[in-house]
Length: 302
Image (tube, rainbow, N blue to C red; front, side):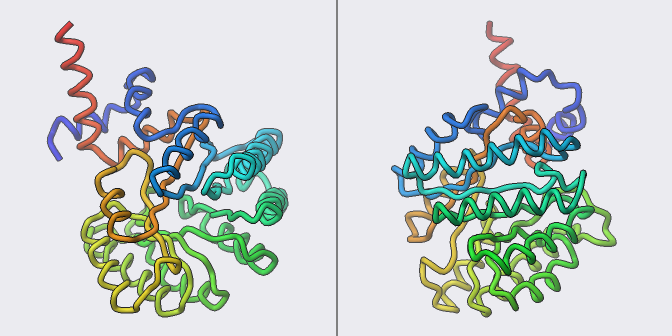
């Protein structure tokens, strides 16, 4: 990472929103549901599958959480009416987890039940470590009632191997990702090797147990090692999938699809694009530096 890239990341809070919006166009479908529908339809035509995500988290008012509930159900409805190959991803803090546990459980149950009536699937995203126990509890409760709900887990948390070991007893459906939140070393691995080794251990545990997994990574090493495990365990294309974020390494997603694997694209949309975009910039300082250099070059050329 160059000094310029580091400087860009450190000064993100001072960056005007129009510049962040310029960056975000690559990673966000748009502010409206019809924007996401357009993007997903295009992806489906190119043989990709999708998961749609209404941006927003850390809701602290019940009315706003209820509005988010309605938006999530609307997404499921339009997936059905438009015949899109997509499911839905949700965050529990957007549905009230920071307000009331039972209120959140009711909201998520309503979404999962609605999805089941439409023959669709809901993935519960994992957030920062302060929500991990409650997220797993809500998932386990709903998994006993509904087969069409899955959970994301993060390989950088030291606890995740034990969590997955327990959840495999229930034939859980997983998305395995590295994790993006800043956590203390006491509870999270910090080196790339530790995080990657944990990631692969989780994938192998899930393959061995015969559960379904979404392998969510843009890391070449993890993809190569996942290919090796797929061959080792003779996994069929309908027993797993790869997942990447919209706009991140499109050449990689194309290659994985050409190699004969299912590829799901995470398609976020909504008015809360700013927070999501800043997070993407912080995750990818090199890309942030390239974007800002392009902007500066364009301004200087005028």
